[in-house]
Amino acid sequence: MLRHLKLFFLCMLAVTDMLLTCSIALKMLAIFWFDEHWIEFDVCLTQMYFIHTLCIFESTILVAMVLIALWPFASIPLHYSTILTSSMVIKLGLVGLSRALFMGLPCIILIKRLPYYTSYIIHDAYCEHMAVVKLASANTLISRAYGISVALSVIVLDLLLIASSYIKILQAVFRLSSQNARSKALGTCAAHVCTILAFYTPALFSFLTHRIGKNVSPSVHIILSSLYLLVPPTINPLVYGIKTKQIRDQVLSLFSHLKIIEY
Image (cartoon, rainbow, N blue to C red; front, side, top):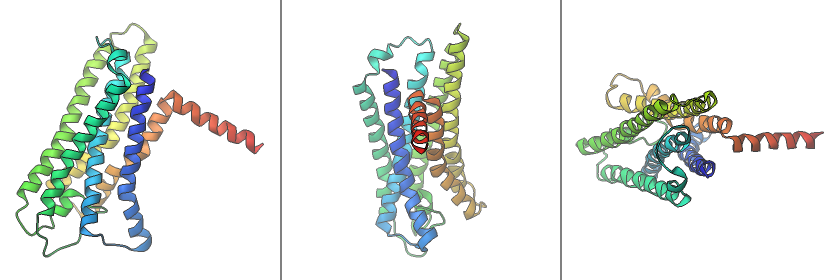
């Protein structure tokens, strides 16, 4: 049962990564291939909403996956086989999606109300929140404050939840008598840590450089923000494809089948 729930979260993560990549990559390719260095304002806001909503939702999925994947290895008094049913997982997904949708909407509403008179050039590869807010010809304190509060609540709160979960679970793991169980749990931890670092580290640097890095060149902003969105969808299939037996077996059987057909 737990394996099916893990695969369910992996499916949600995969769909979120694909949508997140399409939200930025299609316009970036249009810029590189067709020299289309322009975007309609409403399209820009739509892109921004999808990007930030999907990032918040992915952060929620990562938090849930830490608990789902590591609970079986820890001596936690939870009957996850009866608590973590399919309906409960669907409810968790809907709660995370609702959180992302409602947290991202005020950013768009606040930006929509700002006047833009002088500059229309976004120094970024996509419509990032702070890059668009900086173009406004009015007081942007409310938009900046809300953007900071959303970023801090997502990055800091979710990272604290993940860190506290790891601390409690690792304490329980090291109390296990079986060396095999400890090795399996630590291997699962390593896979999750790789995914978490790939997602949160560029996001944190991009967040800080946009707000306190006044002397940072625009090229650095572009590189960091692009890594923040494009690297995790690239790493996640590799990490979870190797660590998840069902996915690994399917990939190996596919390659073996192709090899038989070739001969």
